[in-house]
Image (cartoon, rainbow, N blue to C red; front, side, top):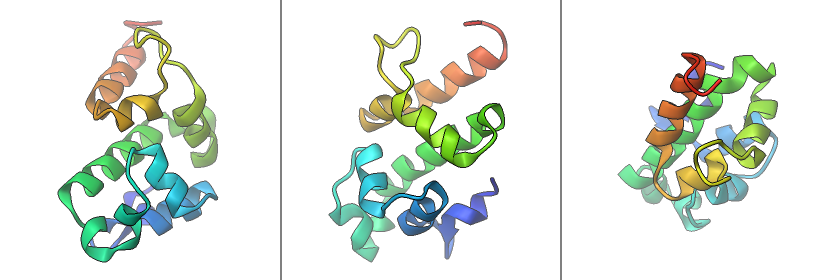
Length: 116
């Protein structure tokens, strides 16, 4: 899905992300390891930390969406599928721990056939 679907005024918007995934902005916050306040107060939404976590999640979901056929199915994978080589942690758990770049590297490696 195009990044514009997740953004507003040049920033990732928790409300728009929630609309695409048919959930709430509070749930989006939890899935990236942020508190509810981080997605409700405008200055917090635009903070570097919040935007980085939202960007990581959107990049991961966008990268795997073609495999699953929809953003919602890719989001379900992000939340629930244990990743090989990460002690059974999901992409969501890794992003919450600040390891989103490792998930993106993992997906690239799988696409290249390294973990196949």
